[in-house]
Image 1 (cartoon, helix red, strand yellow):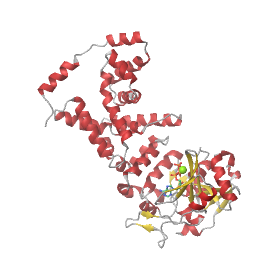
Image 2 (tube, helix red, strand yellow):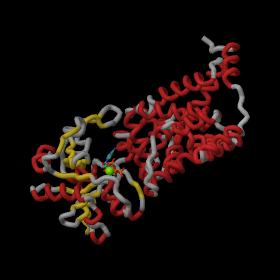
Image 3 (cartoon, protein in one colour):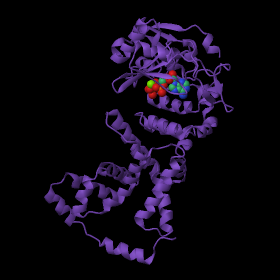
Image 4 (cartoon, helix red, strand yellow):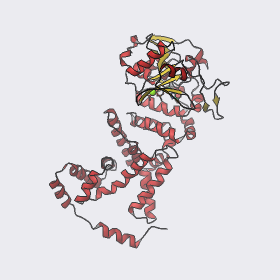
Amino acid sequence: MKDNKRPPLILSASKLGVSTKRINSKALIILNALHDADYEAYLVGGCVRDLLLNVEPKDFDIATNAHPEQIKAVLPSTRIIGRRFRLAHVHFGREYYEVATFRAPHDNSDRGQVGQDGRILHDNVYGTIEEDAVRRDFAINALFYNVHTDEILDFTGGMEDLEKRQLRMIGDPVARYREDPVRMLRAMRFSAKLGLNIETDSESPIRELAPLLENIAPARLFDEALKMFHSGQAGSVLELLREYRLFHSLFPATEEALQADESGHFLALINDALVNTDNRINDGMSVTPAFLFAVMLWLPMKQLEASYREQSFPDPQAMQHAANDVLSDQVRFTAVPRRFSNVTREIWLLQSRFNQKNCRRARLFVDNRRFRAAFDFLCLRSIAEEDVALQADAAWWEEFQKATEERQVDMCKAIPHVKKKRRRNKRRKNNGPAQ
Ligand code: ATP
Ligand code: MG
């Protein structure tokens, strides 16, 4: 690779507005300990990029020439993890920092291993700092910051890219996407989150290479999907993913339903939900993957529910079957863990409870631990589906939650009650589920 022969550009961090004051104190303890033991140690990757862009870094990753065992000798709270890459996690109680030994790029064919399709199979090979720089994904993610010398080392033109506000893959983009197709998703995330353009050569092969994502483990795609949709810029992420034909590999049922939905209600539901998620994240509030999946799979689930109904399955069962089918299909693409998909299912099944305005049941429902998520979902649906009856339901429940007990009783009395039980029993007798 030509990039690793270049001498680095060395810049003064403080002149670029980066000072150690903005660095987490525990990361500094690690850097100092390694430095005192005569090892090289740098902050690297996303944190250097973010410090230069004046964005709050998410985590502080460290790269060093010390091997994992040597790191452990200097910092005894280190745990060495990983089979594919041996990494040191330096613990401070439950919190830990990742300290990685400089690694050689995969294409050092006498050392690394690459599969037939170009994917990296094994790259736990130590290397020099230059080699470590060029095996990273984008040039802006390959900057090294030495806090002891106040220097930023740039082996790949990352500083120039930051000035141009562009995202450029190091080396040959096609080969690098083939090695690890997840880099295409990372391009979408960084472009959306940091407002960067993807440089032409890094951008142009993506649409064609998008199907390579099908070879990626669904567990990894789930993690990447969360990082993208919980980045605080989920609306832009969705637009980019669809524009570059990557969304289909993550949410195929959603993409198909979006394309078939002439009303535009489903896209409106997803967009409204993502605006909501972005606002929550940017306000430091919690979000759950269960909600994201409830939104993304709502129309596919409703379509399947309708077909179960056509086969004469009664109401709750039709939705239960549809929910199970849609969720078990989705895990083949993004492996959403059960603890989340169970909540997704609950959010869906609880939607019918908003019709039941009997006072005792309504109070029980408000106390249900999933009420809030189900209610938020109802509100989004009522607006996106432009459904006046749903909007009236949402307004009723909004008031009911806040009302005094007396007012709650009045609200329930004002609802004309239908004898639902008898009606349901009658329907069961007339047309039970097809066997
Ligand atoms: P953030 O933590 O803000 O999401 P980041 O760039 O730090 O962004 P991480 O996933 O924490 O992303 O990875 C740390 C660094 O490791 C990256 O900056 C990049 O240099 C390198 N890296 C991560 N994933 C890849 C990849 N798939 N291919 C090559 N290098 C990667
Ligand atoms: Mg990071």
